[in-house]
Image (cartoon, rainbow, N blue to C red; front, side):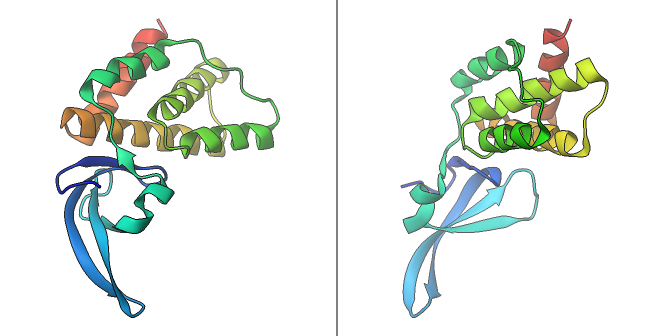
Length: 164
C-alpha cells in the first residue's frame, strides 16, 4: 500500500505524487482512494481506488540510483522498428503504456533516432516521441525531486550527447 508523499507512476497517465488517501462513498459503499497529483498536469489530480491500484499497474517511481540505467538505454543502439506503420504503432504503444520506465526510454531513443535519420516524424511518430519524453521526464523528475522541465532538459541533453 502506498502512503501520502510517495512518488508513483500510472502506466498511462505518468508520474505523480500521492497527496492523500481518502474515503469516498460509491455505489452504496465506502471505498478508499489514492489522490494523486500528476506531475505533468499541474492542478490536476487523479483518484484511484486502492483496491484497483495493482490491477491498474500503479507502481513506485524508480529510485534515483536507477536513472543511470535509463541513460544507458538512451545511449544504446536503437531497435529496428517495423516498416509497416500499423505494426510500428503497436510496438510503440505497447512499450509506451507497459508501465516500464526502460521501455519508455526505448521509445524515446528509437523515435529520436528515427527523427535524426529521416529528418522528420509522422504525426503519430511525433506524438509517440512527445508522449514518451513527457512520461520519462515525469519519472525522472519524481526520482530526483526536480521540475519536469529540468528532467526534460536532461533527457534532451543525453540524446544529443549519444548522437555525437
